[in-house]
Image (cartoon, rainbow over all chains, first blue to last red; front, top):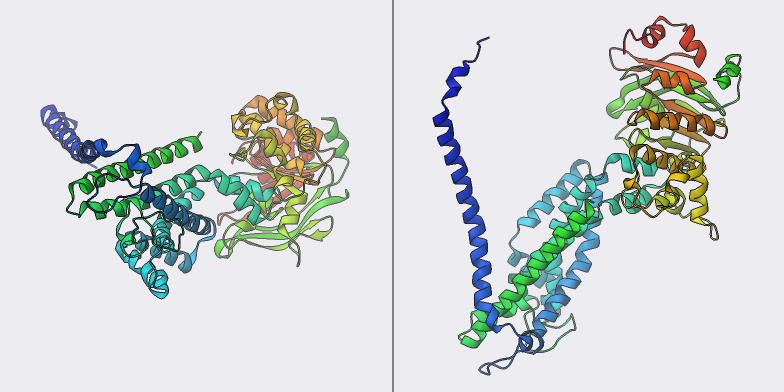
Length: 286
Length: 273
């Protein structure tokens, strides 16, 4: 066995140079990543802030050519569509996560994990087409509900895999302690293990909500959009990101301003949801 | 030590045993034998210590006594475990009901993370809907916490999270939680090995008090502990294949003063393990 020559490693200058290059490159990458994010946030804020006012968030859109108006129906529509999607996706997603974490072994569970990962990578417009085929075409009616289905499908893989990880994070000893008290599998799982992971599960749900809040593509042929107040989920409904899209591709300056303002509102909403998610996670770790 | 002296004259096989294993063999996943052919009678209202080096199958044996073992993949047993003469692995035996009668405390204190001290103690009854209407959770908790010698320290902070307690307190909380479901047998799986000496002595005192009402079976790495608290001691040893076997079972004083088997003597005098 050869003895390593320690003197060879004493070339300090070369090591310092490489270290400086490494640190410098890392900093550059950070600047590129954070810089792009800050540039987007800054640009959206600068462009949108002047058009965000009380009327914008409380009034209905005005007809084409009439200046002013707001996106109140889109804000409400977003909340309804995302809300229904959450109600659909959460129980399915969390319970699937529980299954995969605690009982998921063998081919079936592995297939489920693979499908979930594939689903996470599907383009959202493809998921929108799926919702269109199943829930729009047969009824010959665009609807907020079909948009919620599309959103739920987009949220599912995120909630499934994050819940699975969250449940796995609960020590096996806690689970065994539940069984040792003479509790059934159901009581141990639902009343001890799942609550123990509730912070991380809540984070997963919030991240799922944040993910779909910015989605537009599936809405084009599901919710479709509306100029009017519409709160019936089985009718076409306005949605904020869809309004941003419609306004942005229009030829009118006033609509362009409103598109920026809408984009700013969406950005703020996603930002707040992400903050809540962080808060939920840190709260659960206490 | 007086309890032990009295029991010196008592032969393990003569006392009416509450738990008894008959030719019990325990397997891990894939039919891998872990413990082979163990027959032990655990007399009512006694403490039996299971001692032996790592890999002797002590914990595996203990975990087979309340069917926690079978929660592992593909784990299984052969032979019988009798609770008051009824095989807990027999046809129709419900592991959930078995565990309600045979409580267990683990090496690591495991207060349920999202629950207060009060909710932890009553969890066993509450979560299976067995809190009778009209019964006060606080009274059930007080009784169990008093039995676990923890009431005085926590009576003013019952609504704090269980994890806010010290390690020794958490372990006594887990004992209180196990007692609150009113089991008949208590299994302790190295319940003091993660604790400081003072907490350990507190729990040992507690075991001597609890044995008046319960039958206690305790796995311990600590031979002094076995000598201090137990009435009977079973020495287990693993062979080269990792299969644990019962080498010797006797009243504790006998095991520690005149062990019948050379291997027992070697272990308790510190020559191996």
